[in-house]
Structure formats: structure tokens, C-alpha cells
Length: 322
Image (cartoon, rainbow, N blue to C red):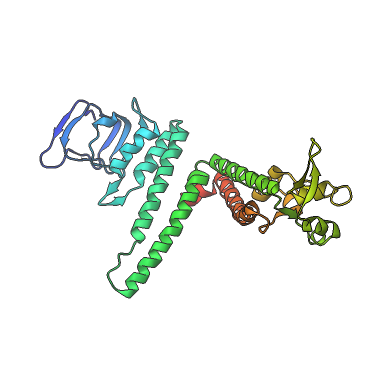
């Protein structure tokens, strides 16, 4: 079916109605001039799709439209997503089939990255439609008001989960994002651990050590004298560092390293002894207080990112959504 160079000027409000059309060979839609009206391709089936994106009107219906290949036409996701957005809605409802069809064709043609981007867009729009359908409009009735509040809370929870799933795993289609998310958590934890240590807000994470005479003596001192290279004596603000390097006190205690501590905190499969040996104290200074609270979130996010990354790598998320 060759529509190349055709001109459609339908004052009646339609341009082309090709529903249930079957074309075994190519469907050419190029250099089409249209001044008014939609194009309906619902349930149509063609072999090759040969088009230019500028020829498509603002109103399309692509639900059920199938094609075997895109030939001599754009195949990049960025260009095709605009085309899909025009034709994947009907009476306000989102229709996912055009996205699924394009992703299948792009994958079969070897454009796997573009296919994944199309599927990610599909999942984002499905999530938005689910939240929109759940909304309840208050009308002054108490029961409806509670139903509206419940729907809003459910939508908030789903939105947060959707954002997390998109950022961390790309809805299961971009597992490398979980690595970058874990790297971000690791850097954040390492910086906070370093600032907390330098502030002197770390202490041994052991009941035995915390109650030992050596640590209690050091921790009780307002000033631990330390001589600088120019022979000027100053106060050392870090009792943990002084204690762990003192030959008579904690020399054999596990040495602290901020990056090893960060890895031990945010990577669930690691256990290198840092978090079991040291802990931030929330009462010694600002950074200690901040890291004491942040460590709970960093550890929880580490578990979550690891789980989502594993699910994305093994394909569990894709199978669940399929």
C-alpha cells in the first residue's frame, strides 16, 4: 500500500481509516500532506513499515497495528516515542500494545537498547494510568473523603515505588543502573564516615571495649595532647584514632578505614568487620549525629538496591511485568 506523496484534506474529520487492513508487503507513508483528520490503523497488519515521522498527523490510533520490520525509516527510540505517544491513547485511556509491538520489532532488528527504552516508557505510562484510575474525587460525603484519602496514600506509595524502580533498575530493563545507585550510596557513606571520623565521633562498637578502663579513660579526657612536627602541642579531637594507635590500649583493635566502612555498611553481601568494630556516636558532634541517623537509611537502601539489581539481572522484574 503506497501512500507516498498523497494528500489528505478531509473536512469531515477523518483522513485514513485502515482498520483490519492486511498488507503482506510494504506500507509506505511518506511525504504525506494532511491538513485535517486522524489516521486509524487499529488492528491493521503490514509487512514493512516505510514512513517519515513528519507525515503522521497529531491524532493516530495504533492499537493492534502490527508490522514485521521498519525499513528506510527512523528506528531510534527517541524519534519513535513521539510517534507512539500520538497513537497509544483512546478516550483518555492508555493503550500499551503499540509500545510492545515497536519494542518487539526493534529487538528483532537488533536495536536492543532502543527496545528497552520503549519498554521503560511503556511501564512509566502504565503506572501513571494506574494511579489516575485509582483517584477518587471528593463530593462532600465522609465515606468518599476517606476513600479519596486512601487512594491518594496508595498512589503516593506506588509513585515512590515507581520512581525507585525506574531509577535503580530501569523497570528491570537497565540493570546497570543498580550498580550506579550502589556506587552513589557507597560514595555518600564513605564521605560521611570520613567526616564523622575526623570530627572524633566514632567509638568502638563493642560493649567490652566501651567499658574497658583504657577507652573510658581516653573518652573522658577533654584534651588529648598531641605534638605536631613543629613541637607545638595541640588537643587531638579524635579519641578513637588516639586509642586505636596507642600501644598500651587499642593498638590491636581493627583499624578504621572510611571506604571499607562504607562498603561494609551499604553492600549486604560484604562483612569485612568495620561496622562490627566501629560505630558513629550521635552525641559528640554534628557529623556523628547525622551519620548515626543516615546509616539506617544507607543500610536499608543498600539491601533494596541489591535486591532490585539482582531481580533485574535475572529477569524477574521483566517476567513479572510480562
